Length: 146
Image (cartoon, rainbow, N blue to C red; front, side):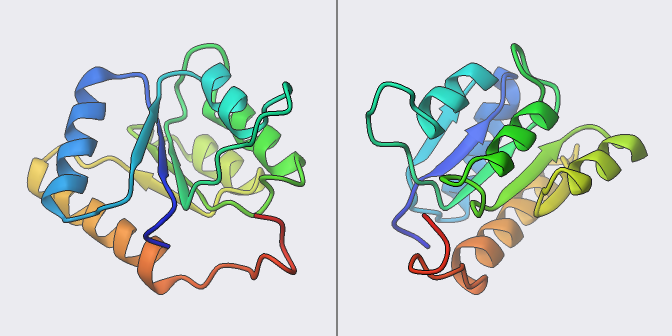
């Protein structure tokens, strides 16, 4: 799904820069929309003002965010018909088992710990983008709302 944007929900400026650089180095041409808190995500995904919602290919989301945690956001995303089937990958520094379990219980499609080493992070982004943008077959829009 190389024509839809990727949402990166991250509040750490260094992680944002690293992730954008990794996508660029891996030749990912999708627009990357960076949102730095949960309120911004909800405004773009589930607008209450009647504007068209953003339809991302995937959402990469940290767990520790201002205003709403990634887990709270995941619950909201999965509870709304407009976003229920959007792939959500928890991309976080957390290695806490409770975060992994809660993420999957709330409907995360994947849980990925951010590698510390830059080369490992590049490989992780390459693998994520190849799988979620090229290999994975999404539910047809006639069966699953976009």
